[in-house]
Picture 1 (tube, rainbow, N blue to C red):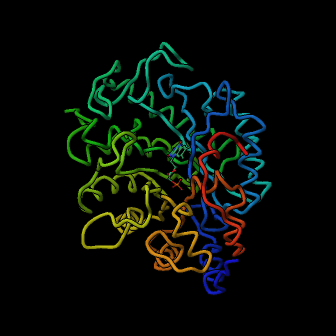
Picture 2: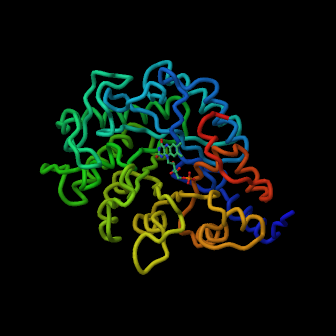
Picture 3: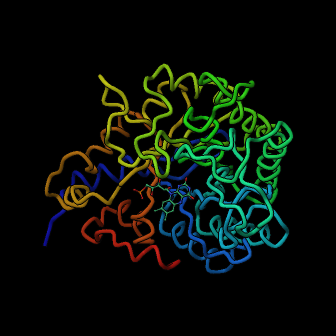
Length: 376
Ligand SMILES: Cc1cc2nc3c(=O)[nH]c(=O)nc-3n(C[C@H](O)[C@H](O)[C@H](O)COP(=O)(O)O)c2cc1C
């Protein structure tokens, strides 16, 4: 039997159990659920199984749930009829039940608003006739595919769809919204020079590439109450291009993030695949750490928390290295970032947060991919 060191137990509970405020929202602790596409919502409607999937994790102590990516009301936003949509009466009624159940379980919840842009394959549900659209009609791998560059009318329509979704989120009881600006989807396609080749006001230097995102943030801000939190998720990496980078230096990163903070982002969610990796030379700060330092806004870190074998070992009192709980707690204690989002470990174990917050580390078990197959 492994014995968890009392000091690690108490330290984890002490640091992770502190509430944190994002604009008008108080999150009861520092553990967030990372957004994870599940494709269990036929017709784009989150049903009772989706309601209980999220409520189960809130009841087990997750402070802030970021839902799976959910399509905004623009016909080119997505390409699956099993991904929940954030428009339409039945779909929003399903989402209202999710928010209500999470609140009843003591948690807070924001939907992740999503448009996939040039990732879309034409001919796919839910709107097979819709074209794939993006800043320049170019995919993350540099090919042109079958999509097209967005016109100003397209841009205005998508901005309006994000604003409408945010207004609906507030109306049906969510605690805020997260805008999906990461991983090579539409908003990120504008941010990244690899997919944004525009020569108008939406392309060129980092500030121009951030303009589309900043206009979405401003429109969302206008559509919701001043205290309603707006979170912006972004990443250096893209799906299919893990080594891609938006910014090579802190200065470049600041050029992108400052207009977004100025437009009304209340917190940033800096998506990395391993939270312990330094983002730039000559500093130990990770991407969430740099984000907070450069913008002054609260930030959320993410990436392989609870997955690395060393993390489990540390929980179990065997000492550890890079991906350890001690490393995470040290960074949180230094206020490098404010929340930690957990993805796969929370899929694998709905009670992960309860175990960690109560110091029941010996009950944690290694992640298994079979968790992806069910909504348990
Ligand atoms: C099944 C699955 C689906 C995901 N879907 C989304 C998504 O809809 N939106 C998003 O921003 N990230 C998505 N991600 C990335 C996660 O939010 C998270 O950043 C990533 O899994 C790393 O965290 P982890 O190591 O704790 O799992 C997904 C990840 C997984 C495993």
